[in-house]
Amino acid sequence: MMAGKTTRRGFMRNGALALVGTSAIPAFLSRSVMAEMTAAAQRSKKLVVLFQRGAVDGLNMVVPYRESNYYAMRPTIAIRQNEVLDLDGFFGLHPAMASLQPLYRQGHLGIVHAAGSPDNTRSHFDAQDYMESGTPGIKMTQDGWLNRALQAERLSATPSAFRAVALGPQVPRTLQGSVSAIAVNNLAEFSVAGGGPRTSPTSDAFQAMYDSSSDTVLHGTGQETFEAVKMLKAADPAKYKPAAGVVYPNTVFGNNLRQIAQLMKANLGVEAAFSEVGGWDTHQDQGNSQGQLANRLREFSDAIAAFWQDLGDGAEDVTLVTMSEFGRTARQNGTGGTDHGHANVMFVLGSQVKGGKVYGRWPGLANEQLNEGRDLTVTTDFRAVLGEAVYRTMAPRGLDTVFPGADLRPNGFLNFL
Image 1 (cartoon, rainbow, N blue to C red):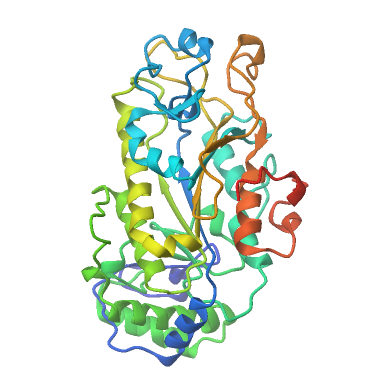
Image 2 (cartoon, helix red, strand yellow):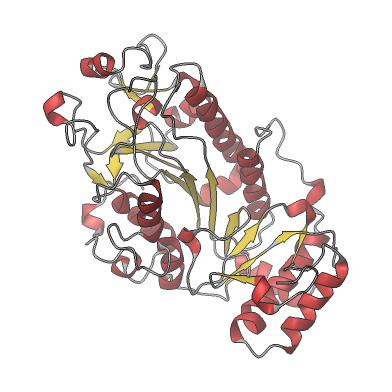
């Protein structure tokens, strides 16, 4: 594509609309957007999905501190018992995650340990693809599980253009599919843009393209999205202030959660939101209660805690779930780190969550209990966790269409919701 030239193809990526930062500021609100906001207020349930890319070390995130072999296998990177933030007398949080402990004690945060994929791959690329497609071992799946959940949802009103939102430069695999999704980098400096320069003519060209297009995707959902952008600009997102006392980490991830809260509090009709945070591939110098992993966990936890507090009463309608492609080896390696493993930890946060509990069957860390002699064994399929979250928030017509082949049934749920 030539620099400065705007094309329709440039606005579309993987069947979803991408929004990026520009200086264009539309000048008016449309009645259609106001109607969307009214309809959006009637749809209360919201699902937030956070992906820890790089495979977080779940054994140091939620520590089985009563397992003697945990300390034998991790002589320098284990979290000492007197530093663990106790949860239930057996498990405890990493000390850098202190901001989440009150949410657990209040019963809002549930934890699923030994969760993961039935596929044994140790490839970041394949494992992430399987978790985002929701079809472990199948590489040809075209759409993501969260998009299929939206496809299967029973709708009682016209969905908002902001129904599915990802914070980042592009729509993630999880949200790719026939339901349009929006990728947002920065609410304070964004409009609809393609390959052209970041000037208001780009926005004008985009609107003209929608007005003249016969493409149903562009002319339908696209037009609604363009109008929604106008409404968001008129709301002046640069002036957004979190709730009193709320301080988000001054990081990309912290800002992403801040913006998700902003969109939800603006009643824009968000039903599904996605964000991600990297830096979890700790092959060397992982650290213990201090160090590389601790720093990432502190940012992760503080951002989630700030998001929860910022939502205020709006948190009543939100369920947040975390995921990572796989865990890490039970034994530390020769460079003070951990290698690619298997089972991991998932968090579920929400007012409706039956928190204050670590869910799932614990497989143990004795040598003979390890997967392939090296990893925590998976006892809960990650799709069962996501499936319960989807079922309780979106009420899809059938979980078999969201997670084909998983054979998920409500009577088999962990019942954390």
